[in-house]
Image 1 (cartoon, rainbow, N blue to C red):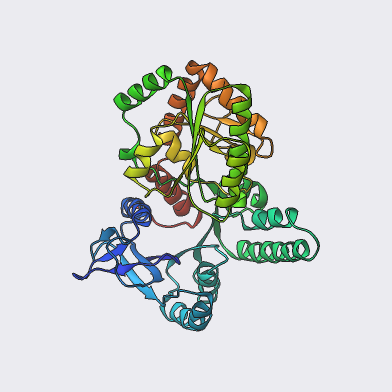
Image 2: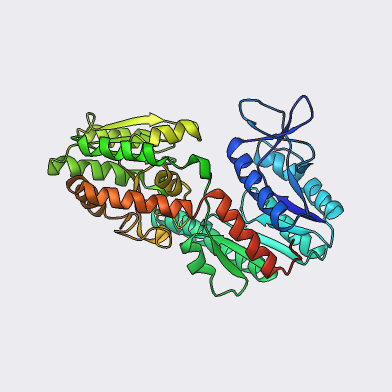
Amino acid sequence: MRYVLVTSIPFGLTPNGAYAVDELWGWDLKAHLEALNKHLPHYKLYVYAPMESYDPKKHRYIFARDAIVFCPLPNFKSKLEFIKNFPKIICIFLREFRKSDVLHSTATFYPPIGLTANLVGLFRRCSKRLLVIDADTIGDFELLAAMNKSIRKLFYLVIKRLVALVLKIQIRLTPLVFVVGDVLYERFKNYRNVVKIYASWVRREDIISSASLLRKIESSKRSEKIKLCFAARLILKKNPVCAIQVAKILKSKGIPFKLDIFGEGQMKEELKELVKKYELEDHVTFKGLIPYGETFYNALREYDAILVPNLSGEQPRIIFDAMANGLVVIGSTNPFKGIIKSGINGILCDPRNPESFALAVQRLYEDRGFQERLIYAGIKAVEENNINSIHERRMKILINRLKLNSA
């Protein structure tokens, strides 16, 4: 029996014939494979993905040949290459998919490999199909429409309607749909085949130890400053401008702080100009990109809190990363309301109101006991939502909804 996973994330082949992928993708596949072997041991995991030349710096996670069967799709570096290879991809799906397969794909709009696989699976009479919606594409185009005028606004609204129509059709045609996060669930919950899930890359072994957490909290209590960070792509929907505005408000209140910004993106120069305009050079530092994993986790542990003022509805994994490393998450109201209980294991604020974020930071600075309680509750939340437990829950739902014979 085959569990077929279709993705646009590429893989490579090592010189000794092993499969190699990006480290984060490797963690996710490993957790998926463990859950599959535990609950559906008679199924073999087949991954259909673009194949590219092996790069040891990029493909750092290696699987033995007998662990997972990777099935190569044509690789593409540009949209033109994708268009040229698209008929070949469809032919591969038509040839390879079987009626008995469990077919698992994502609803990414570019490249639309998952959406195409889902439709081909329908044509091939694969009745056990699963579609995952993990990006708020509709919300992204709503945001772009709100930020533009005239023809551009109309263009984004038309694209938004097209996206909504495609997703509506795909959801209706698919036996089981996982949506990641609360905003997407609110949007699609009226469909009976839609189930809400969360996404985390945190492994059990990555959660900060009790001894390290205690040292971190004691160090924070002795510090004269509250240490903040922002970690995301520097683009509109991540709302990095809000973080700079929070810094401006904190400075005006006379609250000692430092804010480090991790990430790159098209708004970086604009943000640097804002820092200069508000005379925040002594408070705000741009740290660029840090490799995800242990290096990033060690960097996070230097901070008291993270600002996550997202304007979009997708559920970023960074909130679990932050909780796992002893930071208080100060996040946006809508995307995180199911994960974060404001005042219990984090703080929720209006992403369009930097003052609310600044007030949250001020409270943490003035009440370190409150900060400590939120940190411990955050650790508990991430222990319940690590990458392993999340895949366990997903597998149980899948077995139940698709009526599979488990072990």
